[in-house]
Image (cartoon, rainbow, N blue to C red; front, side, top):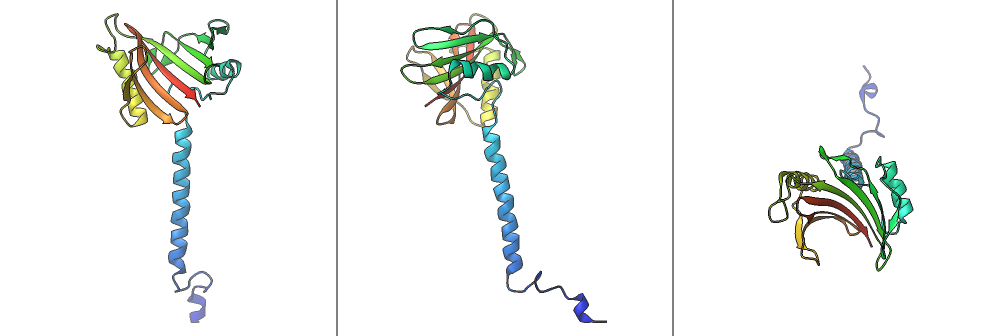
Amino acid sequence: MDTKEKAIDSKWYKQDGSEIKRVIKILLIILAIAAGIIWYSTLMTLPGEVKLNSSMSIETADELVQKAGYIPKDEIKSTEDCRYRFYESSELFGIKTLGSEVCAVETPAEAVYFTHYFADENEQNNAENPGSIFFTVKGEMTRRFGKKPTEAKTPKGRTVWYWIVNKKEQAAVMYVEDGMFELRYTYEE
């Protein structure tokens, strides 16, 4: 029997450490793919979110919101500094919303908001006495982000809980009035 037939071709196997280099290259490729998957998953939208940006016009934002399946209630309306549109109620986290709104702030700084409104269990529920629906929404958002929200006060003195998605995007929950709260996605420069 010829020993040359059994030998592995030297271009495939050398005892100079090249097999270790090959394994390291494969591991680096696997790590790069895993990092890409993690990066891509962070770009995915959160529940009830439509990916918008601060420089969008209300028409562009409205078009994207409608493509996401939200049905407009009325026409685009305006105030001094904002153009907005309301949408019919939908379901989020298994809870029926009162409705949703997209708003494009044109001055002083550009920003776009996409907001979902929820009715809590009763009129006595507020930031000091949150109801179970509020806790469900806040809990689901906390679970999705993997961290507790930061608590702050608005200029009007309302308590708001928020999560920073990235430097141009954040999500927040807060009571608008007793018995009613909002989940708001904010896109600003």
